[in-house]
Length: 216
Length: 226
Image (cartoon, rainbow over all chains, first blue to last red):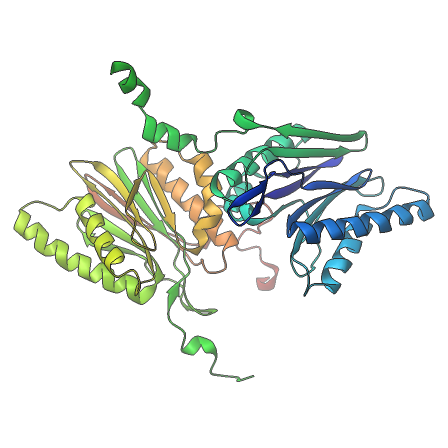
């Protein structure tokens, strides 16, 4: 899995690949790893599919009740802390790496990372899943403060493409969810629209191959 | 808890490391960090992981420090004899094949990830990766060690063929700095070796010369030293 979330001024962009594997078999090549917890708060899931589905369902239930009692939109911080409590108190029995991203009217766009063990960290951008190791260098060199929504979307798409190219457990399509005060938009980037991350390999090894094939 | 003798006093030296080599227009550039660890203790913070095999071929070492030192000693010895018998300088391919033979035939005893790179007049600059297990793979750029995982995405995106010498050196230094930022087992300074038809040039980039990434504090403005 590769999951990622980036904050921008006024919202967040969440991204994920779509491969669920059991060993070397790809059980689902079009899975949706980004789930809604509330209208403007979504979560990226990584680790055990069963564990993360269970945790997300619990948090969704609690936040639903909480926001009705409150009478207004819940804070992203609240959702993240609820998730963290569940992950921390059950740390021996869970394998769940989660990224909570959302928008609230109090603090704007926020990203919280909850890795294995149940720490909670607010960050400008967060990476998770097995494929994330391969893109730390890329993300560190590419990221800058003050990116616009479009720039963040391109950043997420590029990074996840590169992770999918190198990680056997990541693949399929790229799902992007953009959350702003105006609403939530979901995108799916498929096939050849996923950028050719290994273009250097293609150019280097097949350079001249088409020409040679034509020449016979 | 024992106050003085920790596990690190008896642990084997390992080079949790970042090493890489890159082909550029006219030669190759090898780069490495300088941290050697025994457990969590940094046994040497200024080690040199790029060793010479012949005048024109160099080796980047990662994994067990002992294993890679022995392999490079053997290969240097064989190449020395080979050069004398051949009457010309050995090719990079020959050196890489020798490294591969040792790594493959002794795969159950060794823990050595190596990159062989150099320049010869037949193939120009070449980079050969010899990872754990003893594969031999020629590539335009190769990376190894614990810090290398973090670099794949960056290298796939940023490497271009036919870079100039300065571009390639900046590229190598930036990559190793990115790996040092994320990998606890890599650190210290960045050493580079440039090999081309004119010879060999060694370079050294200390902390203040390395590029900074988002949120990193520039050296000299650390509040602890105020």
